[in-house]
Amino acid sequence: MRSYGKTDIGLRRSSNQDAFSICMLPDGAILAVVCDGMGGANAGNVASKMAAEAISKFVERSYRLGLSFDGAAALLNNAIISANIEVYDLSLKDPNLKGMGTTVVAAIVTNDFTVISHVGDSRAYIVGNEIRQVTRDHSVVQSLIESGKLTPEQARVHPRKNVITRALGTEEDVLPENNRCDLSVGETLLLCTDGLSNYVDTSGIKSIIESTQAEAVAEALINEANKNGGGDNITVVTVKKG
Image: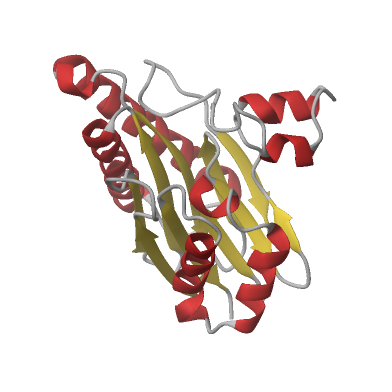
């Protein structure tokens, strides 16, 4: 398995509030984490970086050989819950960081399974013969789509499309959502912030991944998002199997 990541400030923001982490685990598995911070320039930076580092350290410390899917899912959830406590506690201690938080999408990719855990609207996709969104946005517009009040096309231009219903660090408790997917040989797992998904549609993402060497995909996707407006920070992590 090969994994690559890149983050970019975009064209309109004064700071980059995204963060990511990639770690190799003892049995050749990969941990990937992507976060999109919020709460003011400095606070968003602090929340995303802190969460990505805390989740990575927790998993690296607790991961063991032969972990089952259920065990890996519990490990990722516990890592996110632990990071939530760290970010939330710091926001209470420092008035400059009050209200900070971050999205997170994290994955443990092993030879046997892939487990994904997320909070917020940063996404995971599987790209092979087709592209499939694995995660479900924790957002206002996603709730409206599921209730039949909005179509996906309407949601893309809705004025509240960036309002999320769950975040890491904004409250004392957090509820991550887990997904299992089987990454086949030749397929790519893509983790990204909404700076990519809001500016490059799924057909564009699939086309770039198909036509680009694995080590250059993250940069190519970021370039495309910037070409299409670059209105937000953009972070991309890919894991390709085989």
